[in-house]
Image (cartoon, rainbow, N blue to C red; front, side, top):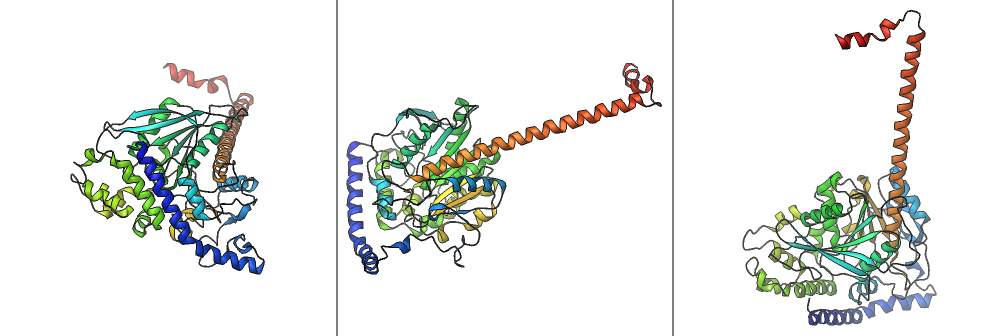
Length: 467
């Protein structure tokens, strides 16, 4: 993106934020004034949500956690392991609230504020089977002096990070990479075609839930680090790509564990319902600016005039991928091919979804989160917090978002759980082998001391073998 484009996007986003705060200010003052008059100081908002509400699809089967969070899953040994790890976590404990505790402020600070210096990245371009390009940014520094190795006794685990679908590299993504590097991981950020400086060498973009490019990237990562464990984290709308990959690949995904921060799970309904106008306009403007440099190259495949006149994310997505000049498809067919939950039953990797009840982008959890997925699928776990915005989960500076700590703690718990499972299987195999050897030796001894036995009977196999 040219420098003037980034400056224009930041300026327009700041104007949208200012207008939004001005529009929202009268609604924010009234509950605060009522709280001050009654002396409660909004303590009713600090209480945990009512888990016994019959209209709440998550209230009947959820485990309370510190800080007003809830853990929803199907009971299993792995779920108990994750639950114990989360209950021991200190990042979920309620502490002093930051000044930006509102969901909109947390979300805007996450997406709008400048990224800052960030980590040192080493970029690789991966040429795909159709001659397209994707980019892999390997995080090589900086690293704290007191680096802790999470996977002792083995190679550092690779952490694959999938940003949001708009190609915006946010503060929290870079903060997660720095924290993971400090904990002994080797983070790598996956960038789609045409995103974050990755050139678009052919007029083909990656649809919302098409994991074909990600498959080739994972194959290359496995080629570079064949013996290292692989974990994956996605942010926001980028979760559709990660979940599509896990569903299509099943047990052949090479991923040990995955986490989705503020995932968009019901994507079609999300596009059709639309977002609140500041987010809708901001995300739409960012996509138009990113694709404006490729307008000439895309003229042969899409109607660029209609594309850049789009007034909603649905219209933009439909024009870009459905109303193509070569092979147009319907909106229904597009989501049959790109729904991230289309093959969710085939996923064979533990997936932790961290969501917030006050997410202004995804919407309320009872309408946007499929409760039956977490209640029936043993591989999907939901950590639902009372507040955090969309991909925010901010704490006091300079601490990173608490969602990053939870993700890495869950990966550590998964590693210990699987290591213990392998150890128990090894002990079981050795015990079975030992008992089998004792049985064979005991039988041989019985045959040797038996008065009715003889050397002819014991070694009769030699005569049959030499005939």
